[in-house]
Image (cartoon, rainbow, N blue to C red):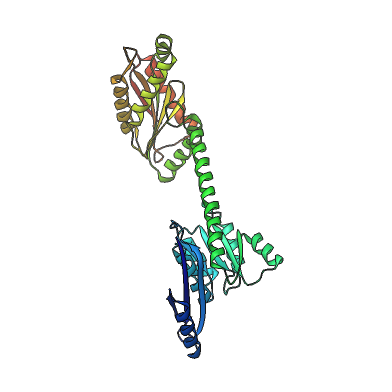
Length: 364
């Protein structure tokens, strides 16, 4: 829908207040402007010709302009185009606002007190925010030298004042398109990263993720002096399952075991990883040995009680588990990821050698 509107902005010289008169006819506009000029008010007509009202933007646009009249003109243009607006009178004030929220689009004047537009651009770019900010630099100069200076400072776009409302709308559409592309790229990269850290068969974390995160979990345990445990699980006689029923059935069994693991641990706290083959690791932060033994025994029972049905055959499996725990408050020797996993692995093989389908644990 196209809105053909004439708007008048009025600045009261005594109070610096700004008033807006909208949707006036050409005849009424002429009369109003004549009366206001006779009374000594400074007026500026804002003609919003041919602006298409856009779909509402999810985030507010931050307008940075020290001139009150120009700021109100920009606000009116943006709101007419469907944008929410937050304003600042200089770069320093804008920087404070920017630090307390997310403003993907910033429109800033060049020359301002305290902190100008170029410095604001540089500071925002140096902040290395996780999400991109599209910066439009406004200036009354249109020389190539100033344009290059603005772009080098970090601006994405350059507009000469007074800004044409229709041009502004088009520039904002460009900003939104670039921001959408950046968001899509970021989402794709995040998905690729997640795929590289997840086991494609079971959907839980893989060994790479385990190797990267486990040392951090141990450092965290030491920092807060909290106990931590690690469970290592191995499916008993898994080779026989593959040899008898085939690898596809073996994959179903592995997925079922992973489901048992994820269903028996605390979400957002504990986390599992596939160590390799039929071996799994479960990391239990904030968990001492008695607590870890309870989790391991519950998991052993879940695996033993699960029935996998394939081609009219019911397959039941068991698992052996090794548990290793440490408490930084009482730990004499430093614990590393290799040491913790090594002790859990030794307990696992003790469980295997002791007849399988059992849990063995150790306090470091």
